[in-house]
Length: 85
Image (tube, rainbow, N blue to C red; front, top):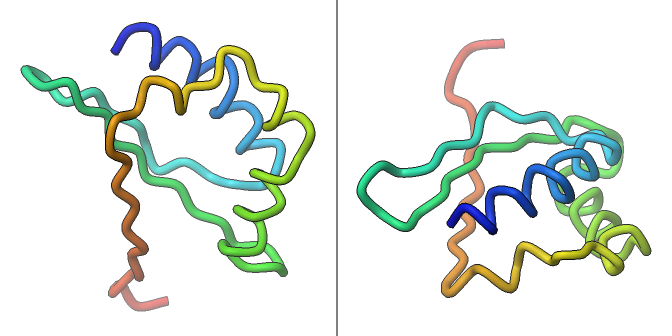
């Protein structure tokens, strides 16, 4: 988990921010080998488009170490705010 978090903080976090993603937070689950993060994107191409561009970028392809090597079973969920605008 320490290696994953180090790779995530040095690679994923700054690159996602460069691509316009915003972070609500990132947490390490105490007593478990789990990591949870919540990100959003409010740009013109929508989250799916920005996510596709992020993964297609040369910077993401060259990321080393690649944090995905530490993930056994990723779980992604899309969420929608229920708060009034």
